[in-house]
Length: 142
Length: 142
DNA sequence: CTTGACCTTCCAGTGTCGGGAGGGCCCATC
DNA sequence: GATGGGCCCTCCCGACACTGGAAGGTCAAG
Image 1: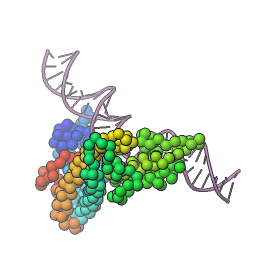
Image 2: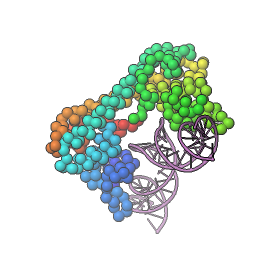
Image 3: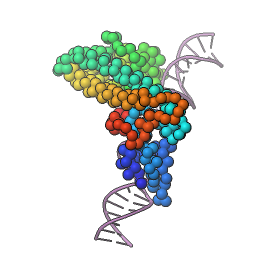
Image 4: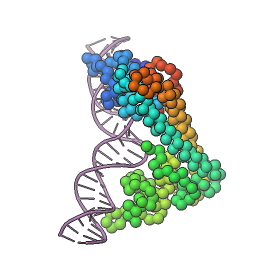
């Protein structure tokens, strides 16, 4: 099948599928006109990738998982280790977001939110004020 | 003071400070040799930015917050609205991560993690298997 | 005068695509 | 045979918020 049907069946945008081919995650055949031709095995891979990505695995982890998936002799311990490391990352991220949430909701609760200029939120962000969560100043990344 | 001291005092890398100047968040003076010269007001801004960023506000939100901070006649409602929208984003993100966490930890628990090839994690990622969390296949972004 | 720390600008890369330009292919219809 | 519309191709740029590095200017100490 052509890319549009592969996209519809896998749930991935055609652009993403082309990108995945670009970085070597899938290798569909090519017809004589240069069109990509996807077999069932390619579809399976795409579905696998979509689900792994939706669980937050990076592309490189997906590449590893895909290799393990296709290796019938793999040890399940290898997969489990990868997944557990990813779970740790997820937990860390959740904790980080919860810390932001706690700090910010304190500030929001303290703010009247009317047409007066007094604003505990801005005051809380001002230098030398109040207690902080203490994290390094690089929240949303990592 | 020069950029290095401003970086040390604000907790931001010098590169980041240059970037912030580039996009117009701070406007330090320049000495006759072309070096940036930071006044206390610039330092305050940098600290403000660092804390707002650490709470997960985007650069554009920081720009808005900074404008509100410097506007002595702003209504605190404007700030509160911005912060509340951001809180919603944080909650959504947490929920998304928790869904990933739930799905993945189920799979991990079911996996023996030994040297045999049977792996419920990979099976759970395979097409046409088991129940999913159902989210769109774009986890870590957004 | 040399050394080394500091400063400058500019360019390129990160990760994961999405948007769009410019052009080719294919099928159906007139 | 010509035309239209849909599908496909490659290639390049932009997004986010920086980070690294190269090439070169400036300053203070020895």
